[in-house]
Length: 331
Image: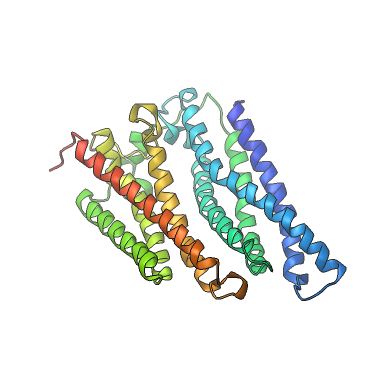
């Protein structure tokens, strides 16, 4: 195992997250079984006092989960010089069988954590905790994934040894790799450009419709989810090669390096931010008629829609700029 401050920080943070999630999950079970806002019992009063503390801790926990994804990728990139064959985070994550599963879990938990934070933000705006059962049921659904992330990350870190020879990103994402991720990287460029432009246009139009007409929240959420997937495929299939100006270099990690002005970070923040905010608009739609939320949820949805539209425009601007300034010319 390699000893590094960032590995230690991620390990401690992940272990603490798992402990807090387990503790909060035991409280969630009590909420689902015993919560009764119409009761003045001692148990109900105790639950009401405790839920404020637990919700605050979870808000910090899930905010840290958002940061953890980027810290994990940054750490993997930082460590790549220690492994023969690695040129970026792609090689470091390929050192053992747990690297990419950990990344996938962290990405899924990033999205779920963002949605939980949105649900919690709406709940605390209501005077009677109207969404408390929903957000704690959601927590119980997320908890196994958080625990699995801790286990996978720990196994990945324990398997990091400097004597291991790994593969470079060109090998992992090249057409000759024969893997599913290589197949996705090899998606035809021109159709993917059209699909990305169409996805962005439809999602932006749906977001503006939500803002102007105050309708179509569910459609916007569906399109945001689709656009999230399409945008990530766009980075892998064509945006990366225009940034590198190499038709065979599809690595989604090298764009996070200084040589490319760290452009990968705003790209991924924009893609993930647009996805979470757009999905959040739809997540809140069923509760907008709850009495204690009727005055606040529509305004909150509009703020999320504005944020989603801004993220979409940022991503679109980056795509247009990189395609315009790139010296890569494809037949």
